[in-house]
Structures are given as structure tokens and as C-alpha cells.
Image 1 (cartoon, rainbow, N blue to C red):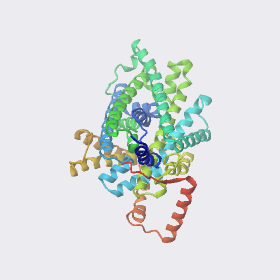
Image 2 (image 1 turned 90 degrees about the vertical axis):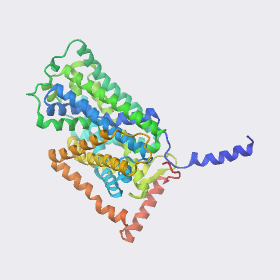
Image 3 (image 1 turned 180 degrees about the horizontal axis):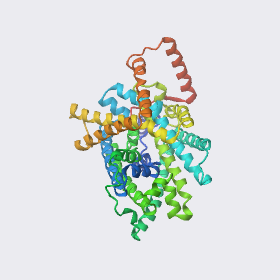
Image 4 (image 1 turned 90 degrees about the horizontal axis):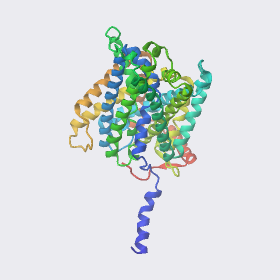
Length: 484
């Protein structure tokens, strides 16, 4: 090849290399870390109490964990189909847009920005602060102000990492995913050893019918499914995944099988060291287990749980801004959200602009209140997404689907999601009502700003001026290459 030809080839390649766009940097390991990190947070260290309380017996609680894992696998398989059928990032937003239309998609985007992601991230930040401070204040509860301060510092650090570099963010997720696995193994091994030595007293008569609380059993599944939630994390970053048609099914299936096995083994380990009554009395089950089985390493468990929360926080702040990015790119949100930093190649505005509202939620919220606040809307939109998938199958049978979930799995999971939504309305009507009302406030905004732009010209000019100044200040521009 002569010099002239090499120069021409270089000219053709250089624009793509230097152009501003989100690059495909997520490989199999990073994708696994995103799924594993999105699922394994604080749930497995908190939810066992709720599952046992509402199931009534040890044997049934373990069955609930296994069935929750299977149901979550059903949902993950549905989202593997969605992730391979539609080439855009954006997760829930994209699937609602493609299957049910722009209004449901906009409401999902609206809810994500207004309260779903701020509340979820705030909850994880508070859980991180609680577990970091717990060893220093035992046996007392850490001061709330200090917990919120530590949570705010963790939130700020994670936002900075996600603004700075996609590579740094994914490597952080991989590292924290290994720490999560180490924390689970650290609990499982003593439990397996105890079982091998014949410590099975708490498993005897595990299915006594008089102990089972049949009326509360749905709430047991609610707690179990909460601990598995997060399997859709990879769908938000679809355009940045290498070989997505192979990666999605492989990573999702392997990760969910591994998580289900780990969760069941962890709960079995808990019952080797604690009676059901002792587990119900414990505020932090993992810490109580560590005090009885790990002795000198007991203080390590709260730190590992804190790092587990930090990992899930990192995954949330990595995926959610991509939903804002795609929505803004489609014209459903202000265009500043669809811009990328010219040097860092990260969706910096979408990450940064969620930060103030998240801090507000963190300062004003409590952990369990925040969980209940987001549950209804989260599961409602998941149910709508899988319903849309089934409708899309019927309307467009020839649409390419590299991976296809069995219809019985899709229908079963969709019905379970609607059941969870109904259960949320029944169990906590106050928080459910507020989250529903906040979601519906997006309807007038959709008709005023998306369906037909009706804002006064003065407001429009002021908004455009602020947007341009913010764009210059943040050094961001629109995506220059189509990545879907």
C-alpha cells in the first residue's frame, strides 16, 4: 500500500476516532459486573427479615427466595429479548416508546428524573452511610445527620467518577462486583461448614403449616423480588455494549443463576447461626451472623455491605443518565441532556443535572420510606414494558429478535408484575398514591413541551439562552455519530 492510500485510509478512520459519541467499551466482564452490581446491593442483607416475617417458616422462606430468583430470571429473559430486539439504549423508556407510544415513554422518563432515580440513589447512599458508621457506634444507632453526610460524600464521589470516564466507571463496577461476591462467599462458607457438621436444628419442621402466614405470603415475595431487582441495568447502556446480541442473553442468564444460588445459600447460612426468632429480632442480619460465626472478622461485614451498596449506587448512576440522554436525543427532554463532553466522552450533563434533586431526596428521606415510594411506579412500568413486548410480537411478527423469551415466561412475569403493583396499592396506599400522582404530573408537561410546544416565546428564548451558556460551561456537544 503506497503512502497516498495510507493517508486516505487515515482520513477515513480519523473522524470516527475523534468524533464525539459514546463508545462500545462494555465487554463481557463489565456487563456481568453491571448486572451483578445492579442486583446485589443491600437487599440480601436486609430483606431476609421481611421474607421470614411474612412467610412464617424457615422452609417456606427459602422456597420464597428460590421462586423470587426464578421470577426475576423470567423478567431478565424478557429484558434480554427487548435488549436484542431494539438497538437503542435507554432501557424502559426505549421499550415503552417502541411498543406503547410516546406518552408512556415520556412518563417513564419524567418519573425517572423527578423521583424514581433520586429516591433509589438516595436510599443506597443512606444505606452506605449507615453501614460505614455502624462499627463506630455499636451497639447504638449512628446519628442520622452523620449517616446522611457520609451518604452525600459517597454520592458526590460516584457522580464525579461517572462524569470523568466511562472506563473508570466500568472498572470501578468490576472491582466492587468482586467485593460483593467476596461478601456473599464470606457468609456462605461458615454456613456450609456448620451444615456439614450437622447444625440443622432450625431446618427441622421447616414447613409446619401452623407457622405459615398465608395472608402475608404475597408480602414475602414482595421483599424477595425487591432483593433481586436490578436485572434491567444493562439495557440502559445497550449502545455501549460490545456484541450485544450475544452478550445480553449470556450475561443476564449466567448472572441471575449465580445470584439466585448465592441468595439461597446465604439465607441457609443465616439459619445455621440464628433461630427464626433471633433473625426477626436482628436489625442487621448480616452483622448478627458475623458476630456469631466470624468473630474477629465481624467488623468487616458492615464495611463489605457498605461497599456493596456503593457498587449498586455506581451502577444506578451509570445507567440512569443514559435513559435521560436517549430521551433528550429523541426530543422528549431538554437537548442539554443529550450532550456529551468533548474530551471525556461521557454524558456529563445527564449525570450532573440529576445530582441536586438526588441530594434533596437524601437530605429529607428515610430508607424504608424511599423504598416504598418507588416500588409501585417501578413495577408498573416494568409490567407495561413486558406487556408492550407481547403486543409488539403480535403486531410485528417479522421484526428481528435475536433472542426470544418463551411466551409463557413473558405472560407469567407480566401477571406477577401487575400483582405486585396491586399489592403496593394495598400495603402502602399513601406512598403509592404520591408516586402515582407525581408520575401523572408529567401528562400536562408532555402535551405542553413534546406533543405540541406551547410555551411562550419569552420563556423559550430564556431557556435556549440558559441551555447554550450551560453547554459552553460544561464543554459538551451533541453526539456526532449514530450509535444505534
